[in-house]
Image 1: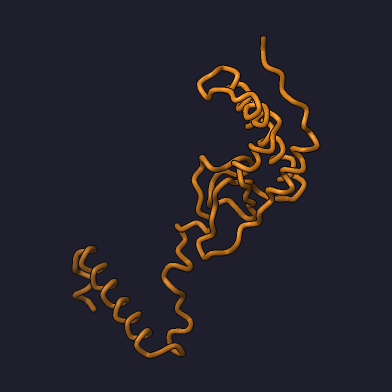
Image 2 (image 1 turned 60 degrees about the vertical axis):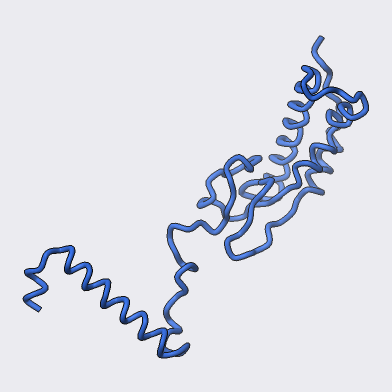
Length: 162
């Protein structure tokens, strides 16, 4: 034991890692009874968030995956199609490079974001995402229908600037 005390710190760490590896291997070889208390490596990793999402897919609420507790998901394309602005773009067949198209799409996005925020608050969701998944495959609640109903209630069309 005195040899370990006089050895360099890196050597002591290497020996400790080697010994702990043997202990883990021995527990795994002993079967499910002896290894029952050992948690799976990926399950309790402190650095891995439960929810996996890109910050750009966040529509409202918390944006950091580690902070999420009750997120919800929506079909963004379907919600945009439900807005009067996108319906006007479709009926007038506006070119996507025109100023009117850009103005109406911005209005549609704002309408969807407002409806998502209202539904987030009403449903006690921590955030609303267009794409999100749980690390273990847990289902993410889908609130597209509720948000679409909010959009339908507030269907006053946006006027184009002159």
